Image (cartoon, rainbow, N blue to C red; front, side, top):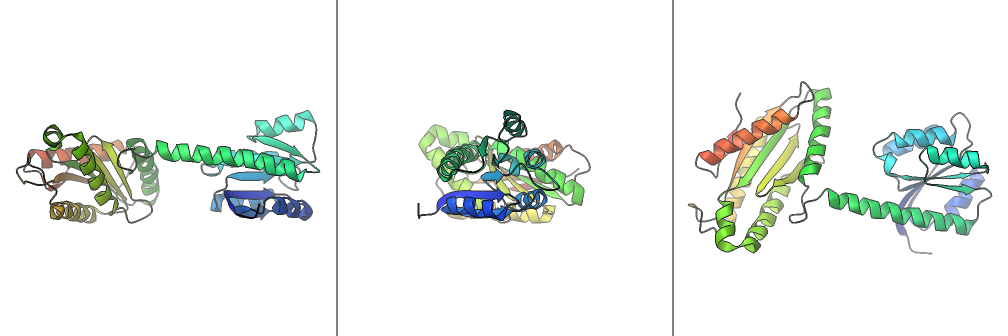
Length: 301
């Protein structure tokens, strides 16, 4: 196996000889990292994402069982598949490993063929689960995040902003007269316009924690953590102007081409109730839609 295969592996063992054996057996994976203690392993899983972790049960200071339990408590690391590789061979040890969150148990001295086969199986399962997880977070039509992923991201950014006492801005967008477009031009044209709008909005998510999502139907949201309301309004105004410049035909709109309305709200979190930010952005959007549309309205207390 000379070609690198997808997969990120962490080998945790206090014996350098075992590390060398396992590293040689698994050298064809794209990322291979090592730790010689439980503390070092926990530090590495905080800094990197791994698909499979090969973990020794017997290590000084902190045994593999405790390390495995702590890995399961970490949000990102808990998705990794932990395989114990150990000289402990009785049933109680194997059961203890599985109870701690491991998915498999390989006995020392290791068989290279067995290690490769077990890792290959669990790597395939992990990568397939990752793919399903990604698909569950994405809107199937437009390719941007779906509502569930947006709500997860909003909760995360809200808690971070609460700790830092920084603003969170949210922009609601709604395509103007979209139902009339669907009725006159058909859903195929409507779907194409939804994709175009999603692609346009995605250009505004320039930072790592910005997020564009399809909220439902012809509604989209743009989450801008750390952005003051003036910045969020400016982003929204620019996006509306860019859509107008595209001049996408819309015979049922008084403007003659596709436009959208936007509502903007900003809050510095004081408690856990992020839902209020959503309500405020939605109310501002409603004001834009009941006015002339093709405009940005910011929420005012």
